[in-house]
Length: 586
Image: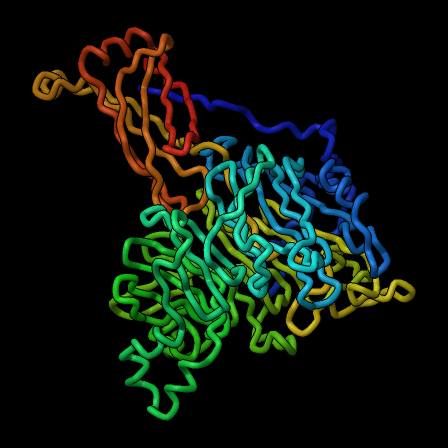
């Protein structure tokens, strides 16, 4: 006997916004090219087209005006030709209970251009926050720094500190002591703060560990290290070598004369995640594996994937692959997403340096049985591209998956317009329909591997690294919790008399952003004059899992609710992120 109304409607699609334009989808007839795995075959007819005008954003324009470029082609090197967004609103919004809450959300990403690979970092890089319609909310151009003032910032790891602040990790090879390795940036105000910790290196990845008030990082690709945010000192750490020698399983399956070789190999960790007080997951690119680590003992519990895997892999067709078979290779951002489910960006490269691939780069989701030691593929979607390194895949509350990719080849002469773009962000539904995508077009210049005098399909990588524009990671988020269900149920007279509870308000909610740990939250039911009828304290679940909470209303307050008819239900976090919904009881 209840209904709810959203706090806001859909975002405007008007072209009047200063940094976004809108045109009709019918003007672009080229279809999406399906890949071997992708079932998306629709053209652009069901999509609206927008453009992000990065160069006109004030901070970016000031950066471009003040910067100099010794390599020539200044604007072509420092700014993309275009950033195009295609969206199907219904598919982004997801199921009806989300309303416009996901559609009203944002995407954050680090966009970097590399003309050569050296110790100077990027040639141009931006951290961008935009809404789903391409309206840029803020953009932070990178600057040169370091001892000699020549290293350009290039952030790789990107995580939500809270709904208004991003945690950014400088690229993993940067050891310059005069540059911040980890930075907090408030995209709403522009304020930023360097985290003062004893880290020597930047990191592919970092995340806040609230239970320790620590920062978990990857150091020098082989070390998992946590630093105290209070003292800046290291408070926990393991290495691939120590984990390797701690594994009885590895010792039993590896000849003694080979253990030293195995344990001294380069793990190249690119994702580290503390999922509970005693569980740390670490994604290893060069082992093509995810490692489960006991934090208390610092020992290796199991290896999932790669040549040393403990698990049998089962594909979508039910075919089994023995432990040690590399079903995915050189993946990025392999992470736990709740329960026994994991997701990754599977690069698919058997040799990233030579650009040799076993299969196209793809989003891949698996379920793990730690008793039977099986890993079952439950969903996959191919990008249709070959990305030797970089990439991400995140599971959203509505079941969509979002992540960036790039292709080692670009073809400006192709009839498929997507082949001319250098970088992408894809959002795909569980049914493998494209919901939203952003595509970055780079200039055809020699610095990116393209000959402007005679444009043709070109290789745009140096060794394994991208030349031109690419995106290491992207985050989708909202600014307040999503509330998807509010149901009021009156107690029976017998129940009310015995318990004193007149009724219950049942709420389903989701965190505003993706987090490896739960966040303290509160639910409060109030009348129009602010009278509190009931409240509850709870935790919003990690990794965008649904959270259900009940607010008990005492008998007298329930009578007030019935008399008022409409009350407010507020869900807010300890970090100040709040959503207010109306509940009408009839």
